[in-house]
Amino acid sequence: MLSTLFLRAKKHTSVGTYAVQLAKYYWAEVTGVCSASNLELVKSLGADVMIDYAREDFAKNGQRYDLVFDAVGKISRLKAKGSLTENGVFLSTWGSGGMEPNDLSTLSRLIEAGKLKVVVDRAYTLEQIIEAHHYVEAGHKRGNVVITIEHSSSA
Ligand SMILES: NC(=O)c1ccc[n+]([C@@H]2O[C@H](COP(=O)([O-])OP(=O)(O)OC[C@H]3O[C@@H](n4cnc5c(N)ncnc54)[C@H](OP(=O)(O)O)[C@@H]3O)[C@@H](O)[C@H]2O)c1
Image (tube, rainbow, N blue to C red; front, side):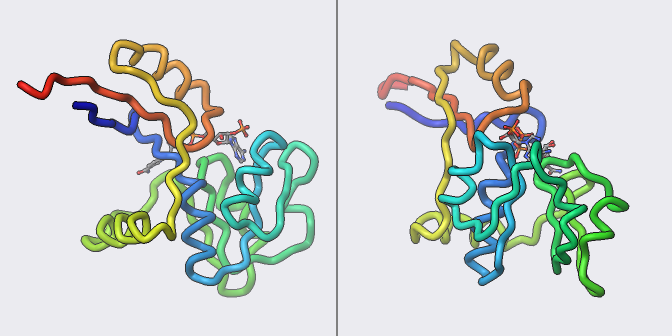
């Protein structure tokens, strides 16, 4: 029997791929900031406006946002502040807030209903765990990295 484990090295959980979809699910207009290689992926997840961070600095485009969510923990609150509306909010995965008891059940309900897509970048076997960690720690994965675990049905 095969069971699947999502590789959670330390604390990586492909936050951005869920953030875009959840924001769209809650009727937000989404501007996705990512690399050129991720533009199509982020667009396919529902983002309305795309910014390639190698070509444009979102903080200099004069736009104001109600929420700036840094899904990769790479920008400062100070940098984001200039791009917020008067009551705008900045959130980051660094020091991110705790989970509400129902959050996980909400997420699984949305996934089961097909409203939230789980993006899987690569799958590794448990024997390839070192390789998997190296890939994740390189910091360019696109979505989730999965570890497959084979175990005999007699176990
Ligand atoms: N606090 C918590 O509970 C918690 C939980 C989960 C995750 N985290 C943190 O959340 C962050 C995200 O983790 P993750 O697993 O989602 O992803 P990750 O593995 O840290 O990031 C990989 C993705 O981010 C893209 N990326 C890198 N720099 C970027 C930038 N400046 N702007 C936009 N995209 C960029 C990479 O693509 P390119 O290289 O092509 O741009 C790649 O697709 C990590 O820092 C993790 O430590 C925190």
